[in-house]
Image 1: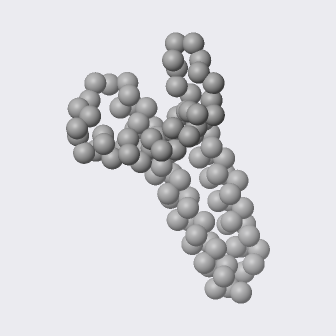
Image 2 (image 1 turned 180 degrees about the vertical axis):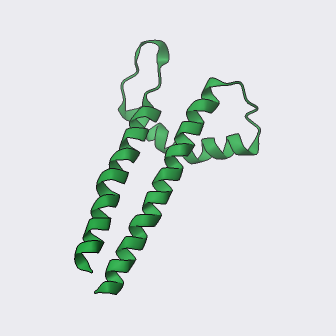
Length: 99
């Protein structure tokens, strides 16, 4: 059973790292939207390519506010925090309980 517990702990750790990195990409996307950058820059294109599919789905669900303020990065950040604090910790706790 300890092998499954180790596997579950490793999955939880990798998922935590991926969610952490994606949260920073979303934050980078917000910062990029505030400044005047070259949209042909490979880094900017990468950040947009990675974050836009998820943010676009969130945008479809949210109502449009006055002034065109985009709340999708905030909602995405909260969702990532929820997944990190609920799902990842639950996986770690389950792995610890199994071992």
